[in-house]
Length: 148
Image (cartoon, rainbow, N blue to C red):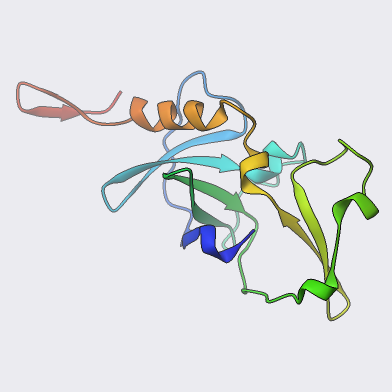
C-alpha cells in the first residue's frame, strides 16, 4: 500500500467486537482516545485466518478522511520500488479477477503485491466501518460513561 496512506503501525491491542459487523471486521480499538475500526486483511481476502502472533500489527491508514486499522501478519520495512519494476496487474491477472491490485512489483528477487486501499473496501464499506466505530463510542448518561 502507498506509504502516504499509512499513519502509523501499532502492536495489536485489545480489540472490542462489534455486533452484526461483517466477519472480516475484527472490531474496534481505542488508539489514544480515537475509536478506530479494525479489518482483518486475511479474512477480507478470503484467506485462512492464522490468528495473531507477536509479529502481527495493525497498520492504521487514512482513507477518505477516516482512519481504519488493517491487521497484517507483520510489518517490517518500507520499500521503494522503481516504476520500471512494476508490472501492470492486467499483465498478471485476468480482468475482474483481483481488481484491488494496482501492480506487481519486482524487487531483489521478491514479488510485492501493491494494493489499492479504496478498492479493498467495496462501495459502502467505509460507511459500515464508520458506523462500527460509532457504535463503540462511550455513552454519557448521568455522568457515567459506559460502552455498548
